[in-house]
Image (cartoon, rainbow, N blue to C red; front, side, top):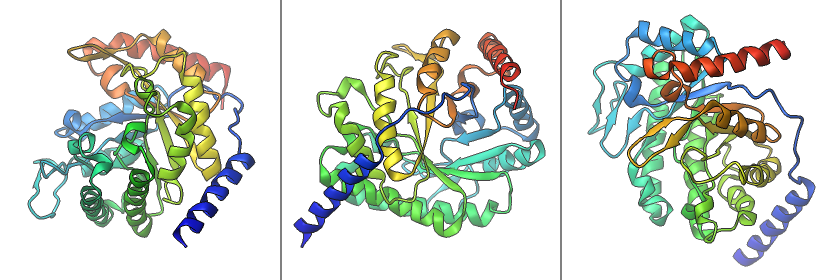
Length: 337
């Protein structure tokens, strides 16, 4: 019976791919709609500092901020007053402060859940770890909805576990990841009607382990029937996993999978460059090149990250912000909405 079911599912998958070939679409205006921010950077901001940050983003057309995660599930620490057993909390309630300021400014906040750095070591190799991690995140969802569900600025969710091809070699691991995302997404759907985003990436340096031609299948098997609404694909240019030469093909194969699942595809355009010691702001010409390639496939652009690398409130990043602002204003003038 199990073999027959697997065969039927395989036929269904092939049929879906034939019915939904990857297609380009009319290129959208390549300006950012959202930007990621990490909790270590903003966990102690007061209301005025959040208002300042939102004002900076709004001047360049960004109406959504994505808080990457709100709890370290390994260190058992949260940036809001959690009641989870064994957890410590940030002195200031970062989640409420961010949401309150967003209401005042008309901004949207996408809340990232809990995350453990063990993901990069254990990942799908230990299904029991995934089960426990999903359970913790289900509890986080319940708390966030109970504590902050009344805020109209809470407009979406982000599951911060980023899979790539090496995390999902073989049907067993793909199945374990599918259950993992399905369990977390299911808890969100039970408690909220806001959409859900994930952000995988393809690493061309690992292409010998999984050729790009297999990436569409992998994405489909991990995310199908999970209830996740948005796949925001990291272009991984800043991390040096990919280059502007191959991201067209990577987005095309990813769109093949999202089209077959009826899922929206966004681009996470990396606005930094990597060095041995640290990351640094990327040149705007490189960022513009990335977005021009990705625009054929995606519905929206997400920056990683204006807040960290082109931030008008950081003296050393003003030049990068100003360059992007000129680009944004030029596009707004050419394409008035």
